[in-house]
Length: 304
Length: 254
Image 1: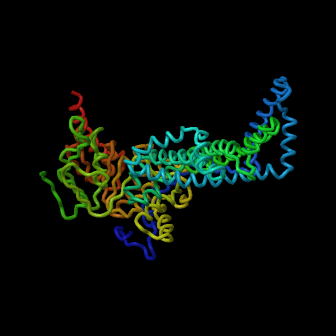
Image 2: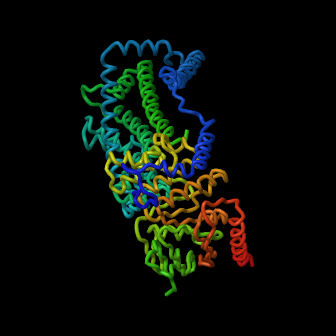
Image 3: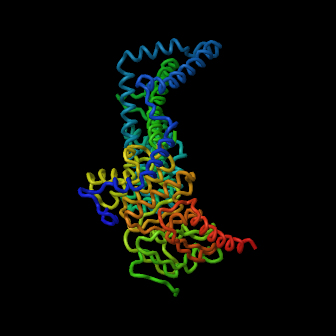
């Protein structure tokens, strides 16, 4: 490496002390410029954990408070007074349900389906997205199909899934995967498309080709858009899951959807509202996870 | 096809190179019969108005594009720098340099050490852990230079690398580039819009015409180094070249 150096390379590898001495004036100017350039830039601001948690959570708490406030206003207005559930009784109902095992079983079962279904959707969506963005004819043929699938309301698939798989969890998983995979695939395809041509040029002159180009350049470059696709995919998955659970009732398998369905049959508006609060809170919580992933990527890239 | 002076020591040779983009009536001829020979260790600046195909020329030498006609011969490895640093934002400064080493198969332990040394060369020792966005424009461009050096190239292609920097930073980076290219005996093809920069840096300045790009004239630069961009001999030759460029530009105004 240093053999092309005009001067004798120092023993034990090469240092640039000699070169640095030669241009000591220039180097000092450079160091000064760097110091000036970096001065006045915000350093790494990393507050205490408690403060960061508070900053992350107060908007959610505010959102919940807003919902409760509007709800309480409607109750106070006396709208459908006989059946409209008030905040107090509903929260008491939720508290009661939280004492029993059924609600927790339902939350567990629903989240389990969500996690498994979403994980499978990530694998299928990513593989599919990678193939489609890589192979041009496939892209022409399948590209609009993916968007078509995405716009298809998941509830329209429920009869198909129920008839194909029967009333069991496979039908519900099928609905989640079908709901989430197109968004995830689209996220990856768009991410790959938006890879900066300049970075691609830089990577290619560096000697990155084929798989290594994908691994070291295209995939990391498409990560932000991919995460946006994941977030959208999750929203679709969660909706599909609720729709599926409401309709596809699996015997002896309590789920949030099944509890809602049960409350509807029993005309228990208060119980249904309590379950909806649970669904709402889970939705906000998972969304904040994606938000955190997105923020951490933007921080790394410096696009906050 | 074209006369050219291929010497035994030439590192880059373009012989009668033409490049046409597109086909039929929409075709655009970017380069027309360009013949340039660059000796090993020579610093050649390419200058010309917009549309002279400078960037196309570098892409051809880098092998990112193929010429429509003519031949290009390059001896040794080629690395390239752009007007933007084009650093990968998901990697640290050190990570960017290491990736270039990895692309040519340098082992993990050696990579780390070599990346540190390369950052030292561009006076950025200690900044290996910084993310590109945490550095100034000039520092980013130096990381890009370290990354180019990591490719262990014999030929360095530079496409207006200092075009986006302020004059003071550019001035200091000229000194750095002088030092590094001399120490490593690099062959450099340097594209710029800045005539004084070309004279400050080059052993030779090649003036290209526009639409299509042709070699108009070559100016050898015999001013001894170290040079200063504001010295009288640099200014004098620069104004000669500027006159030649103006003459060419006015041809397009008719």
